[in-house]
Image: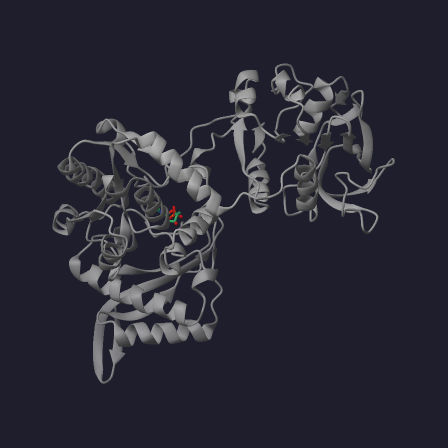
Length: 514
Ligand code: XMP
């Protein structure tokens, strides 16, 4: 495995993405947590030092532990990582030269043999790369030579072939360095990686790790029907069988047929012990008269924990709580200038439960990215309809029904949403869209159907593309699709007589309406 030491670059996660895509297992550790001992214990086959916002010329700027240079494994320094490598090994870095941001071209320099970090590069005599630096290397460390150069970065690529230390001034991990992937692949090949890390291997490894952690104890898992908790549940069940019990809290804010699908899949298909906690009356009663979005979220969050706790206790003696935490939630961010951030929405998760119930966590997905979780789900035989599902928020339809929630409105919303998603699937658009849903608006408008007047609810369709849910664009449907969908909703759903399409991006909008 490979270790990435994170010095706080905005794009460190992309290094891990690129390597995982090449079937190489790697982990990102913040520089503060990497010590001589932890490094030796991790025993990486190669190390990558990431970029970062600091300047090596500033006193107290971060450094990797000395053991990095003594392990005898290949090391690649990227941007700040390059400067650290040069400074630590006896070279020189200076500030105050021309800053360079954005596109640049690197040309090969010096002599190099066949099997270098250059294999397959420089076909056109130069490579386009993405630079972002103020400091630059002005004197090489002993043993290094320049093998690539750009107008503002004379030492764009440097190498000490004997020790297999390489360093680049640019960012090979970003898309704007078109052949960056190849450079990383050359580095990992020189380090002896063959790209044999597969989901099948991960599955075996994860099952063993769950067995080691849990021993003979019991585990409970909150199942939401989403991809993450579903994959975690199936994996844990494979590891410890019926010592796993799932609790599916039905808050009455689920989509059409959702509860049946989840119960059918896990209890009937996978034979996983499952408690279907149908608590819709409890939640919907508590939500009566509540119109404020934050109040809704808090009411649902609090009840959810109470209900989950009640059912978990009924199993008796579970020592572990399973959660579908993913890698992006885990990576400790390297922060140089923290500041208070504003709460836009209080997200609903089961936070606080483990302490309250005195339970340890089992998080078998904490090393995976979302698309890897999907791949693992496929590996475990979960059907595509589960694995490829759009995200669905914890508070469910409550936040797609702005203002006060009534059972009537929920029923109308469920039907409209089902028609909309059916349309998307029929047109083959489901997988192109990050998330799509209907929101029922708290206004009624006048319409005419047949010979009669109608006075019914208006609804809004939402569909966005996104990579991580943090930013999003509205999906550019054709007018024909929108027209056909509006007609179907109005014809098939009693209670809606007007359909609008929400074309707000995020920011300034959010994906959900509340
Ligand atoms: P927003 O509306 O903030 O949503 O743009 C970003 C993503 O997060 C989902 N979302 C939630 N997921 N609990 C969740 O598990 C929540 O309370 C919650 N609120 C929003 C939303 O569906 C979108 O994918």
